[in-house]
Image (cartoon, rainbow, N blue to C red; front, side, top):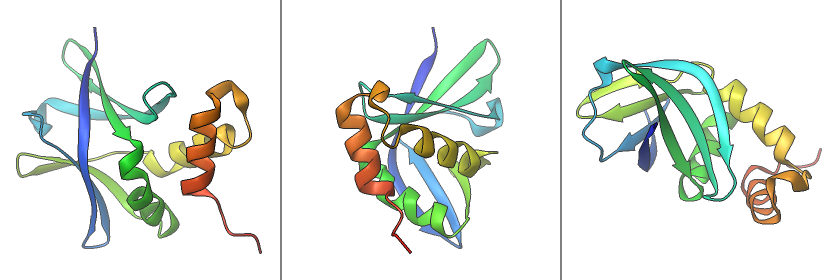
Length: 126
């Protein structure tokens, strides 16, 4: 069974998007996979990290999305931060952009997920 790491804070610092957690994890024990999922029931994006013995899911709840949107718009690198260390989440921007494009207007993700994604990640019309 995969353990979830809940993101509890998101900030932009030194032109980097930092996603932090209160979980006692050792960054050195995990590696980025560049893969993401969607948890429509929990209104979360999930970044998958590899750890000896299996995968762990980094759960990014709706409350963090507005800062993530700012990071995406500025093409910032994204990092998981915990216990004074950080791990670059490879492919984060590309995966997020792909998922946002797929969720927008797609009722398969559930009305609430679609509405929240469209609300937070809506691109201004030109």
